[in-house]
Amino acid sequence: MDVKVSRIAAYLAVILTVLIIVAIPFYLKKNKESVTYSKALMGTVVQITLMEGDKGSFDTAAKAAFDEIKRLEEVFSSYKPDSDVSRINRNAGSLVEVSPELITVLKAALQAAELSDGAFDPTVGILGKVWGYSGEKGHVPSKKELAPYLLLVDYREIAVDGASSKAGLKKKGMALNLGGVAKGYIVKRAVEVLKKNGVERGLIHAGGDIVVFQKNEKMPFTIGIQHPREKRLLGEALVYNGAIATSGDYERFFEKDGKRYHHILDPKIGFPAMRSRSATVIAGDATIADALSTAVFVMGSETGMALIERLPDVEGVIVDSEGKVYKSSGFKGKIFN
Image (cartoon, rainbow, N blue to C red; front, side, top):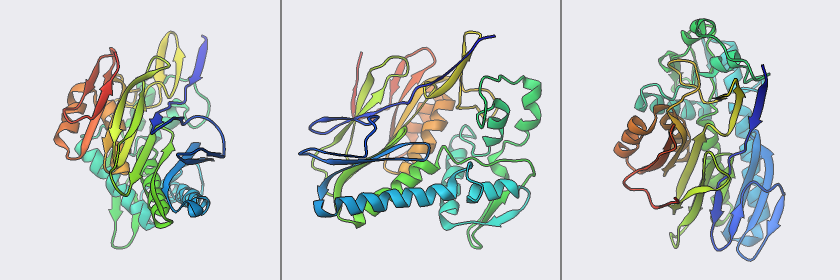
């Protein structure tokens, strides 16, 4: 059988006075409006665009933000053997001492899991090993092959003890993966570093996550939302301060026997979630936006949009499995035909 492995890096365009295409690889670019710095971190190209504030400190601010991202990546990455996440996975069945940042993100992950009735589940990482996402791709497991691993997917088996700064998995064999929530938190922390270093307006783009900030809400950032099937924008969202995160089936996938298998798994069945093509969430908090974009993608247009509508300070756009577009009642921006 022919296996076609494809990876399309999702891009979001950010427009202020000029359009910044965020996938362009460069370290430093200057124009009249902004200074943009780029660095490879978290398995993607992280771009920091600084627009207003103490311009003499921009270089220092960007370096400090990148340093913070790198530091936190060492905490959350399941690919780094000394990270808190890796230590939790190696010691599944008991608690281990972890950093305060890990405790914070675990609590946010559990909140998203509860809100979505398990559509977002940070213990789904064990299924990635069956699908080969940690190594070779192209393997489609049978339901029988997945069955024993599904017994190890349950966010309610995560233990968090904030008082002792310990956390762990209650069952041996379980595996934690915070890739669907930690990136938002990391970018959020990097924004805090930029502000402390005199930056008053800017944005950070990391893969499918963008955080924008400004001291005074003078004008919104216009964030382009990628079309999940065509090389064009689906629409534009207006964001003054906050985060926008997109999850889609076009980011990482392979095709086998004419069927697309992407990397966002439905925790309840162990197979790729099939109710959506993409889900974009806009929220005041980047950690929540990151987790909810995954949750809503898995839930689909009906239950996913219902979740968005009942949460304060959260808006979204969902493209369902047939390509129909849904937007929340408070969404600010426009959807193209």
